[in-house]
Amino acid sequence: MPIYFFWIRYRLTDQSQKMRKTLSIIHEEGLLLLGVSFLVGHSGSQFISSLIDNMIMPFISRAFSEVHWEHAHFMISEIKISWGAPLSTGLHFLIVIYIAALALRFLKKQSS
Image (cartoon, rainbow, N blue to C red; front, side, top):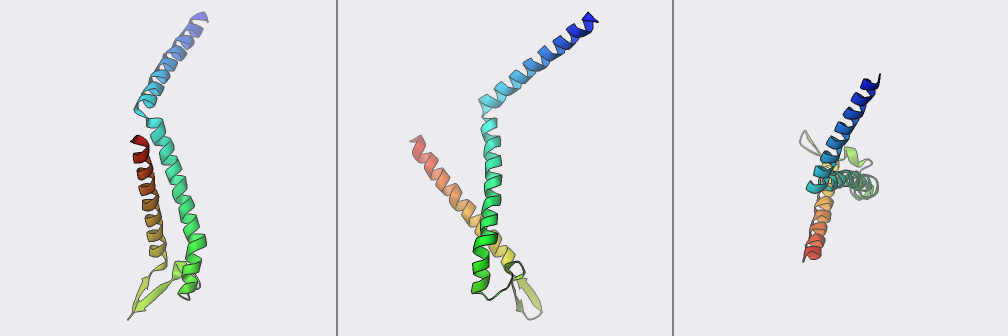
């Protein structure tokens, strides 16, 4: 029975040393910051999509006399071209690019 406890203690000590080494690598390489940045960026992207879909696109669809912007389209001959969803995605892309440019400009000022 005591040998088993020594073995468990050895395994826990070995694993905690590996964990400390892994955590030090994560800290040294800045991987934690990268992971947090990814999560914040993903959540921010969903927030921007929600703002566009629920606050901006209804006004745009009213301006073009469309009831639902998701189904907004125009016809050329027999070809149906949807414009609602691509416009929403384009607005999302432009806002993300603008925020990224502002962040880079801010970081450049901070580094100099």
